[in-house]
Amino acid sequence: MTIVGGGSHNVIDGFTVRNGLATQGGGICCLQASPLIAHNEITGNRATVQSAASYGGGIYCQLSHAKIDSNRIESNSAVVFGVLELATTHSGGGIYGKDSSLTITNNTVARNTATTDYGGAFSGAVLVRGKHVP
Image 1: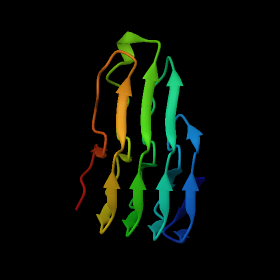
Image 2: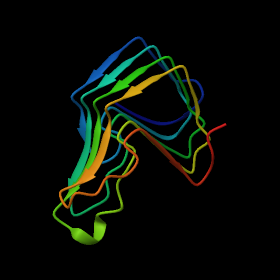
Image 3: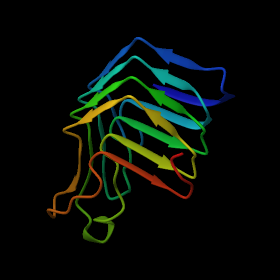
Image 4: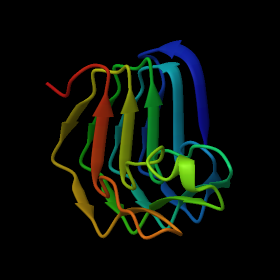
């Protein structure tokens, strides 16, 4: 599920987002959007790619002020394989925020992973880069 633009008018509430696959945001991808993501089950999604960066297995937000509240974010993954020099360019198996100020409250974030086929692991739960999580 991808949201592009739209400010804070978008709401994702009460859905099951399962078994998605993308290079960014295997479950939910927010690009210059600041949705409310609440009361969802986000599970079994993957951000994966060969020879490029992958981020946010469950949720990926870029240039966002998303509110992420009361979700179950579980068993998602971010994986890079095939290129050793990119072994540190993927992360946030559960949630990844880039240049974002995310509000993350009352979520269950469990058993998420961020790995490479070279054995590295980087922030399996939540990683926010460029801004901060209030």
